[in-house]
Length: 138
Image 1 (spheres, rainbow, N blue to C red):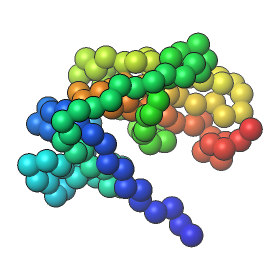
Image 2 (image 1 turned 90 degrees about the vertical axis):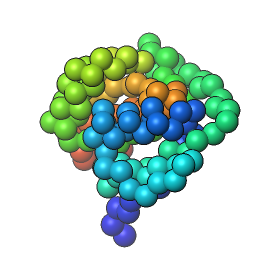
Image 3 (image 1 turned 90 degrees about the horizontal axis):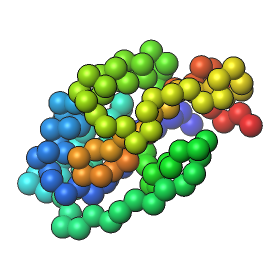
């Protein structure tokens, strides 16, 4: 079976501000919407922001000396796409939870990663592997 698009829905506290973030900063194409939710094309996946009255806080887990927010989501990008996104976010003055950096440099599973939050406090991680065949390597 080939890779199929996933569907992910996340809670947001301000639909307009978060909609603008995903459309204007992240560059995602907007799909259907209502006054309480908006669909986006998230690298070929269906991503939906839903207005909620209360949003819970994130927990963190220590990884490589960083406090990694849980839950978080994102996409594994091509290396050049990751670099372009990193530059675009820096130019937009996005505050990173974990600044863009390279993990496992020169080792199996070498990867670029970065963490940041959307305006509603949803944590995102975008990463890229030097060699995609090592995504699940031990």
